[in-house]
Image (cartoon, rainbow over all chains, first blue to last red; front, side, top):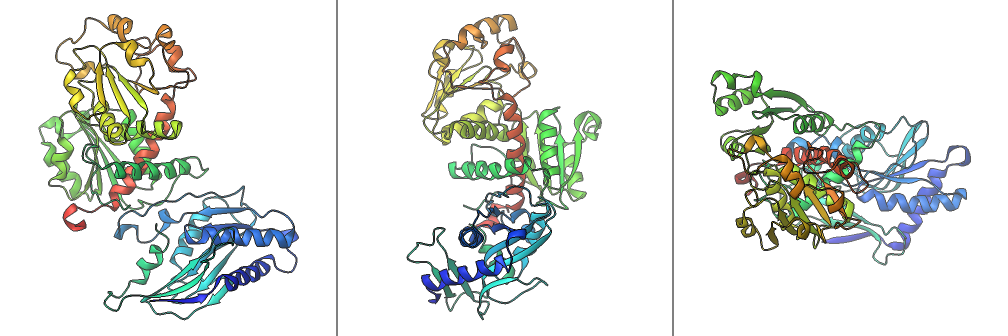
Length: 196
Length: 314
């Protein structure tokens, strides 16, 4: 069973507000680099970069980051599919905003911070997520949140976000696991949302 | 797709989609090699053993560097300085390495089927780094990776493999990978080294002993070294005659398409199978093959490490 949480216009308004929060009061001296986490965070990051560019009046660098090699469960599963990592320019000394669709256990973000630091030492790393669904397992908290949603472990949250913002079926959805499904290990399911 | 194989023993048993998945994974590892920090923690804390019973330098250092870039610990074990010289069997050597908690064993061996033999009783993952005249799967994969990267596809391309086919594991692994991915393969060389029977490999494989015919229209020319060490009798009169009849020289280059790739698995014998100027020329991708080999071996180690035995994977 799937329940809609946000429709396309609400998602658009959410992303606009998130972009304003990322820009802050005086964005000019501290233009950030946005980095979308493969795969769900990539389209969200591109949308946020476009919104942010309209606010600050210039192009905002936006890249992608694959956290696969930094996961803490590689020992316990088949090798996940690896997706491209493209960090735009030098992040040394710059503000980096990691972007993901859903914040869950925090393990993906832990891996993302390790992966990011191979590319340099940012002055500051922030985290922006569309949905914070709870069930943190690590002391990590997002800086910019679209919406907080109370979920149980049997549910999954799907953010459907077209890069141009023109997708008719864009939105956020809550899916219930079938009644006979085995209880999910939140560790595995967190990463599963990032596998292909 | 998800990779479930515990070992990489040959390309014959791989499905086309598995080969493509490995090549796609290798592309991301190639990007890792272009970063200023070329190392990722995917195999952190794992032990990889290079068990090279047959001597090799380039394949061993490529595997060694691949394992190091995945953050594994690497032990190099060569036959010359080992207990194999004292009469220990391969099985006992491998079991001893496993007793040291080796996670992955990379085997180079002069006998065909040696990696398959190890895989039957070892708990560790086994990678074939060349077994006799049978297969050299990572070489076949890096050749196909290079072709795919340069030409954008493999399917429908005309690929000529010129040289010692009979004794070449590189030729066999190339044949499997290329034919599974839909290339048209032409095998050429002296009749004693290129048996007509190779046409039975796959429907898109043909044999010719006419080098001009083999070169004309080829999109890729893969030159193989004469495997003197594997030949029990003299299969052709002299290297001079081989160079004159089958070597890729300037006059034969005139028959070759201007955008054809010139490949060679190394080590090259300048002036025998390939003229020096061609090996260093604009169509040569010989050194890129070396770079790509590292990426392909990282991908193979990464995927195989996540694989379980087939009984468990179901």
